[in-house]
Image 1 (cartoon, rainbow, N blue to C red):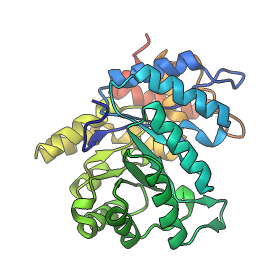
Image 2 (cartoon, rainbow, N blue to C red; image 1 turned 180 degrees about the horizontal axis):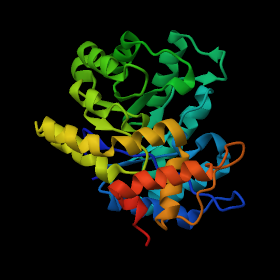
Image 3 (cartoon, rainbow, N blue to C red; image 1 turned 90 degrees about the horizontal axis):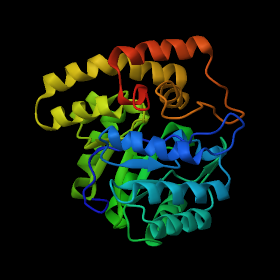
Image 4 (spheres, rainbow, N blue to C red; image 1 turned 90 degrees about the vertical axis):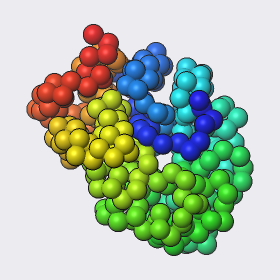
Length: 307
């Protein structure tokens, strides 16, 4: 299952649970993965931004890589995020992930802060060198967090010139238009056009040709039917299913960010604590209450899995 292609469907981001004192909760991590498998996901992505990868040490990354891939054990494909500004470090991360059993790598463009970025030539080299380090597919993450503009011609060129760069996670403003243009420009080289950003623009992105989505692990069990119905040509039913869950997705995206999944999983006894690492702030109690109220209305698996 882990090596079947093309990859399509729903590939949520696994959160990284911490104890109240901020240490890795490895048993909680295994429970997170079990909950995600119970959600019927098509794959799992680890060490991403919604996994708080920017707050992890290198040793913690290695520990989580081993724990996650060992625990999932090929039941679904696992995407491992290997982003780093230094090409040699991204290459080393890619080789480690591939050796551990990753099915795909995900990579943001090289950037550091608001002003230190590579030009297009260096970005092409960066992605190509990481891709050449392994034989598994590479997903390019096109997200506002980097502050880097990845043009459609650049992405299409990557797909044409680097054999394993075939997947693209587009989560920028106007994602649907960019997905549509990328598919037109890249043709068959675009094996997996995905969206992200908690699936907040999912219907428009599916209409544009997206074949997968990468939300959080908050409610993938309720997002998956939208994708399945849409791909079956039952768009009206897909839109109705999406309308039912959109208030919760919107609240997650606009009010909570990565803290939403942890709050719901803690309420659902998946994990013991919804702690995030400093300098991220914990959810305000009123914000958490609003989140849980909306979650209760649609009752995702994460809210009841451990009860």
